[in-house]
Image (tube, rainbow, N blue to C red; front, side, top):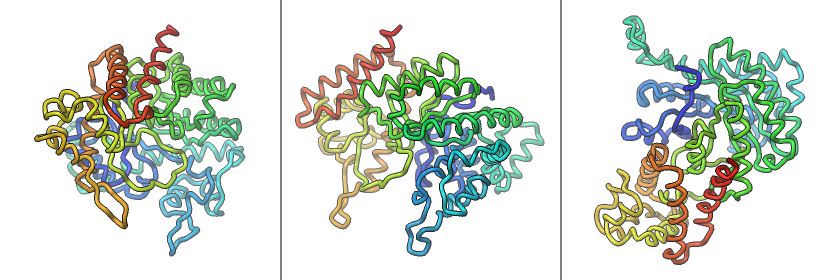
Length: 453
């Protein structure tokens, strides 16, 4: 595989064991690559090896090492269970052992990692080596020990090319950069990236350098200059994670700063992968500012650096024309405003004709559409039924494939977004502006690129 092809196209992040149902069979050809968090790999390496080698048919993958997890308040890594309260969670304890010092020592003492812990160049080099080699070996070694290993050895002896089960690229250790400690952490990040560049070259593996930043850092005066220095390291890919960056609620100013950041790397011809992105990022991919866009199952188009409580799950429907996952009650208003509840054919023409919608919407859509929003009461709270979740996720995955592979021109997309916003605002009674304003913001941000020339 060419280095430039190590990461490309439509990426999906594997979050939980249940996610695999939407990554195999009907969905195997709807995406190009899988992204695993190191924590889930540490938790279930054998199961993920089986998923990659057998169920996902050797789909390319890479691993996010999640080294940033060890820099935050230590309580985020501590268990809250009665039996293990205060102890480091087993998954992160295992990762700290695999990554070694300086993380291992700090975790043993129930402390968070600091930039000063990487002042020793020799220690930093050994740390980076372990993090990178771990990514190469953790799933590959499990696959080689699995029940199908003899079969792959037979193919190898017969001269038949097979996947080595190794990741398509390896990711340098990285740490989150908020505006408060930006200067301190960027030096540590660049040091780890520079060392990893040399190691990756010796390992003959493409290198991804991950940049994890807060939204407010985008507005720091020195940000563009400092981030631009990553280009001197010459990574094969930049992996971008902007903390909780929701493209639907982002202001035009935030969207423009996002574009400005991507343009830094475009000028230097360094491809960028957005690790959490939605349709706006897909548009930026079309015009060459992104190489790839990643989302997780159902709704993971943005994510906070520090995990927060998930709250009560709610039924949401991804409305294709708005490219937005909406609360069901809002989606119902929007679908009605689009004229999609009149009859089945109008639903297919005006709302969605994906495989799942053609399975669900077979009679009166005013009735059958509720299969995307049915709930059940548990302790006086409403939760989506398993069938509702299945319908919503399957619909979402089919629609995302269409978004990535659409042949619509950019001009056609911008016109459609503008027209859809006007139609829904005019006809969907009770639907607030917050559900449609992103259409205008996206159009304005894209036009700012065109006007800049």
